[in-house]
Image (tube, rainbow, N blue to C red):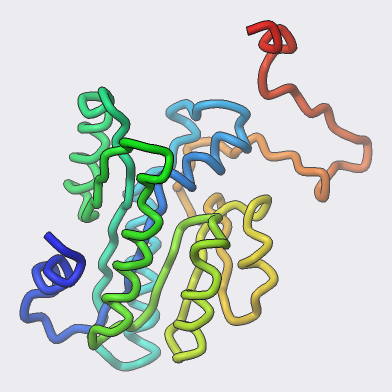
Length: 218
């Protein structure tokens, strides 16, 4: 199914305008792993039900402000590495059960990522009637900055979700609203262990290594 066919299938005959969420799973996973120094535990994996409730609240607020019928449309874009289908399948099915569409693409080479697919999806919806708002969860400013600024210039409310440590491109753009993922209520079961060089406590902080020094011997 192509992006235009997906857009037609998911909207059907609904006359409602839509707030579009695009979740860049590979990029968000990389950003979270960088903050944690490794793979997240269950306590530090994003809860998509909490994210969904936040998107619903955003959608309702846009509808109230514009006096229009507005619905959310959320899609998670992800790569599937060879041999990982059985591991990833429960996560994909859980997302779909909550109400997210999933675009899954095999990771066959270094350049077989989902960037172009996300940008294509945004362009299709940009030129389709009824786009009420866009929310992009990614720290990839190289891919998203210009398309999102163009959308904002057309009067579409644009929000970027990410981690403040990796999203200076969104934080410094007045046209874009930035929301740190950890600020969304209930997304993480426990606070992330975040200590950055620009938010150090007055008495200093220990920054633990991401890996043991002995890894240099491998």
